[in-house]
Length: 183
Image 1 (cartoon, helix red, strand yellow):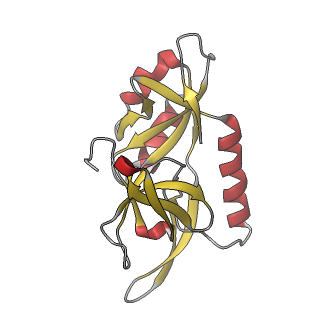
Image 2: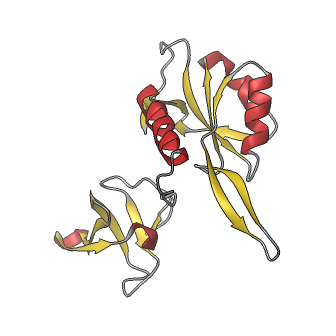
């Protein structure tokens, strides 16, 4: 999804992923647009069932994220918008989201509007990412992702002796470990 950290000589404007407070995506997007920014908030229409009725509601495809095109010098304006908590960073540098990734998400949303089955949001897991298995017979095991398929192949092993076993685990059974969590 990301094409790297932005440096001081980066482009005049690019897409940034803005992390919002919970359920503040629509309001933050509206305020950003009012302030003249180009905003992308991918929404999915879902049917919600209450006791007495069903209703179509629009929910963010990526909860707590709004995408905004801006120049690096404008990030302070974005962070001043109510509901925006931060801009995604790599270290202390804001990260640009590739234009191609934004276009891919736009295509996905259009396909879903055309009647394609709505997938459940899942965390992006890359090779080398540390995870914990949270469901099933392997619950509690911490592992490293080695391959991506419909299921995730994870490596469980003892680094000290250089031995491991591979398991195929459904992505819904994995929790991404924070960098500061002990293994």
